[in-house]
Length: 84
Image (cartoon, rainbow, N blue to C red; front, side):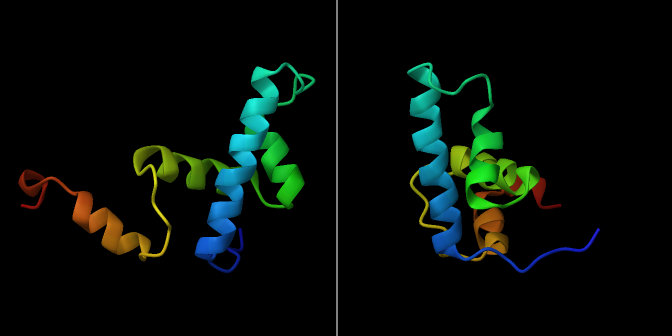
């Protein structure tokens, strides 16, 4: 499967904001049975796996601005004992 271009920090923030909006819609029972991630993917015309990856990262790193390259963020969050 071909990979697309990397998402910009702005695009990742849009995914998070859309996810927050659709989550609030779901809590207000206005989602009509469609999952939040599915709605975000359809709204922004991106893959469901992309939404899942960005939201997973966001949940592990709340408040991130997505401006650091992912490799740097991962390296900075590794536990010292795991580097053998």
